[in-house]
Length: 165
Image (cartoon, rainbow, N blue to C red; front, top):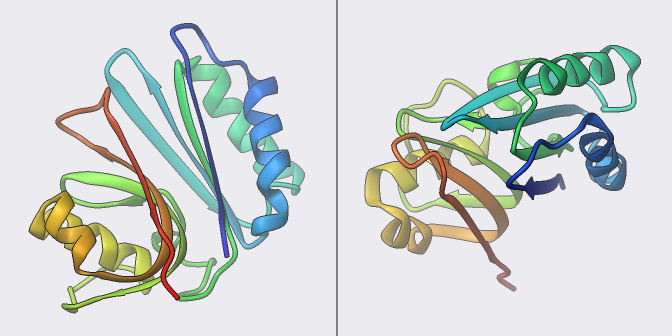
């Protein structure tokens, strides 16, 4: 499984908070790490194969946070269950045409979509964009937690979870 965390503030979020977020979820996935940062009505997304614990990945994330000085941050660590972490299209945040999201869980949808990567998360992004949030969530089968942002509503974050038996 994966790990997700978010921090939302009226002020600037420093690298210490971001490092703490990653440190608290790193045990949930060591195959890849990614981040989405928000500043002045715009989201910036970056992701890379390999654990958050690798010095090159920590430096990569520090540069992004330091350059942008975000007011909101979403982080993700990945334990690959579908698709190789070496293919960055499989790593989170997963980008769609209308939105991006991070996801923890294993799911499938009632329809197969043509995707760039090989992940169940990309299928989830496509279902939510194709059917809308309510119908899209109803078409997703499995257990999940997600944080999602629509590009045309950059200051609104959709957070939901579902646990099925």
